[in-house]
Length: 140
Image 1 (cartoon, rainbow, N blue to C red):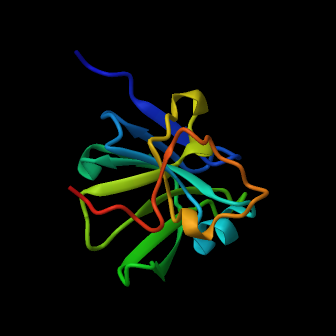
Image 2 (cartoon, rainbow, N blue to C red):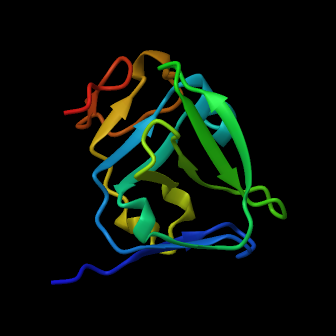
């Protein structure tokens, strides 16, 4: 049975995506980079494997940064409205991560864990039932 694609994009609609698979990882991240990027206490993400099957439209502006792991991640955002839309990873070319708020149906986001909880702030209260990792959990 085919799952309903995950669709979304930026606020102005210039950058769009359609992803035919289910996410392999969904998290709230409280690292300082995500705090700066979001302007809040965390970022919320869905990661998918099968990047070659993702349909992207529009021209995103990209910015490479070094993650806490020491590996590069490429943040992609709309050059018109500035909305962060997705990120990719040169070390994991088959993975694409989208921002939960960029989904057309944000209610489809079901966070599994909190990453970098050690950097969270008391004013950014997340679901206490979620498993919290001090940094990024090891990949299985």
